[in-house]
Length: 114
Image 1: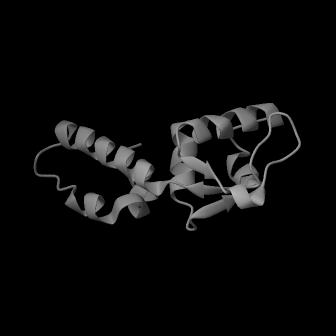
Image 2 (image 1 turned 135 degrees about the horizontal axis):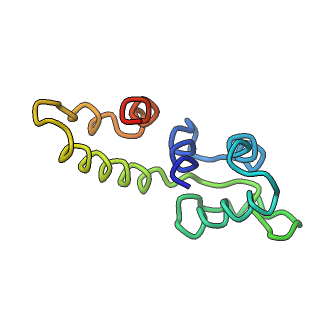
C-alpha cells in the first residue's frame, strides 16, 4: 500500500482518472477485484476523493471515474517518515532540503533510503 501511495503522490495533476490509476497500479495488482479493493481502501483513508460530477462505474465493486488526490495527507506522512530518518541517521546529515521540497522529492527519497 505504501508503494501505491508513493506513486500517487508523485502524480503531477490534482485529479486522476480511473484508467490512469489502472495503468499506475498494474504492477501491484492482478485482478479488478484487487485493484478495486486498493482504490476503495485509498478512498476510505481519504487519499483519493471521488469527483462526484464524473460518476461511478457499473462494475461491482463500483469505483469513481475520476478522483481528486489529497496530497496534503500524503505529504504529512512523508514528513513523519523524514522525522524517523532524522533520528536514525547521523546528526551531520541535513534533511532540511527534503522538508522544503515536500512530495516532489519523494521519488528521489525512495532511491536514497531504499
